[in-house]
Image (cartoon, rainbow, N blue to C red; front, side, top):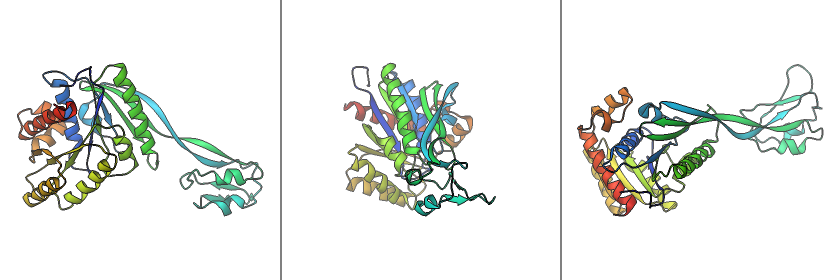
Length: 308
């Protein structure tokens, strides 16, 4: 069992796409860590900052809110602009537009601006400056399952990887201060920048896959990412009985790549019902078929993390 004599372990839970049940399993693992025979002091992270929903299941009782300031965009001071056109000619993102009031001045569309600052350095009248943008909020919340770090990126903003890194840093510091022994990261779907940030420092990656038509493809691309960063990988199959042929393909793929399948979770309406209640399925329906398999998966995860 994990204990304070060991360094903090980090488990990241990922999937090649959304909708595989990753968050439901993450919530169940948070519940089992709290309710284990030897309770594990756990810090939780929802790294899906574009569509965070782990808090919907873990039901935080109290949250602290902090602002997230990301990149900067260019802004023209109209009174200084002499209308020389140079910034418009240099902008490769077509973000510079003339005012319609006949003033011979320009403005910059903050949505189109990529923050390269080429216009700033080229402006002879020093009319352009870079302005940092507030791009979202991040939260430190208290739940009965442990402290939860999560965030909300504003629509249209693109610094999700940076925001994931920020909340992970704070979660890590909190884990050290509170002598937690496990960090559980509910990762974003896919293989983009926020996923790479979510994987940083992980001791073990749990891939949640499903026997869909594209299941092997989604499994393969997230596996390639984890292998690139040399993170040990295990797999669980969710809704394993909905497409037997697809399940056999995943089994064969895992065998070919020498990846252990820790469990096969059957399609279980109890998971949906538990989500409606805003509780992990292992808490709301501990004897449900899905809960029993997730308990087995959790026991194997603890063994992997402690190398028992």
